[in-house]
Length: 142
Image 1 (cartoon, rainbow, N blue to C red):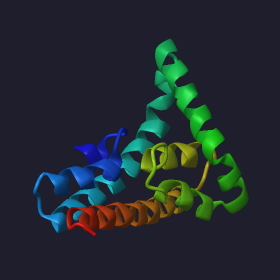
Image 2: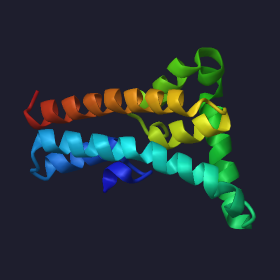
Image 3: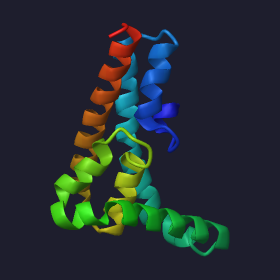
């Protein structure tokens, strides 16, 4: 569940699963797949439901706040590096990056959906590998 949450994604789901004694390989695969599935679901939401929900003042205020934060934190990278900038934003395993921000940025900057999906997926894979390897090494005392 942490891996589909905007508050953690795989950055929290992987360590949580491993630290709770689940199989480290199964945790990696499940968290990775869950994280990858966020992009199509989130993009669908942004394309189909966002416009309607923007009529609700509290949603509009929250959506604009998140959009400003996403744009501010990534616009330089996206404008300068395009696909690679988006991939970089998603792959960093730090708070405020990941597939949710990557999807929002893809939507805001009108990046072609197939390229955005590829950049997000590669970024998620790299981020998940970094988090998984760090967690496994830490649990093993390295």
